[in-house]
Image (cartoon, rainbow, N blue to C red):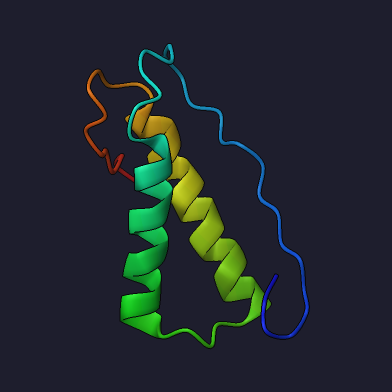
Length: 76
């Protein structure tokens, strides 16, 4: 829930390839959100939060496709 009271949700991102390891997925989400807050500040608009969630889910999906929980930032 944002400070404005909006509840945001972003679905899991589907990427090609098998899910081989879920270790690191939650860390990928947290690290991506922290990076957004560090870069843009905490007072994000709902659209900025949705972009942050989309990016974090994309990184988590890529991370689940590597063994050992290595955070992956897939090419855009």
